Length: 185
Image 1 (cartoon, helix red, strand yellow):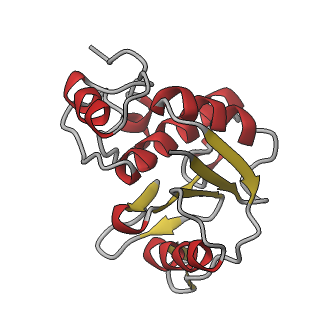
Image 2: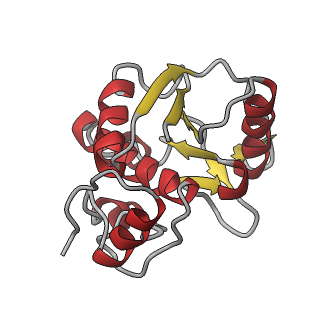
Image 3: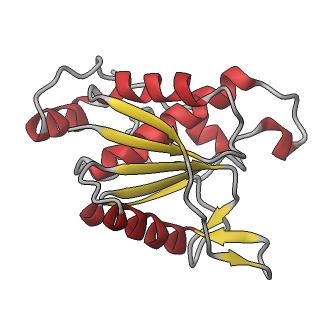
């Protein structure tokens, strides 16, 4: 199994390959990173955000049109929301193998903090691996340091380690056999 990452042109050039390598290391599966040629829709002018569900639908259509079998993760700079939430860092739809991650609220500048590309790369890698974990069949985890913990705030995202807790690691090993990096314990 491989993961295809489509990197949106506005999602900070230069971080795509390091993020892809980090996600590949975390998940233990090959990752291909390409520039995103996909037109993302779902903009809600009342919220000045994009509906993550509509973006997932667009990615699903792209996969079907291009006869892609591998899971697809889109990384975008667009600010995302889902019904009932102010924002989301990302969203996945496991049955169809599509996911999206937004860098909008991962950037320090969003919070009037000093730019930090290393921290941004860490956040993209962590959330990208989280959403890809869903595409591989994993559910959310209650361990706040596990990749599969669902962060609702930036501090929670920053508190996660670059690995799986023992329970999620065992679950993932049951899904595919390549070695996975050590747990967060």
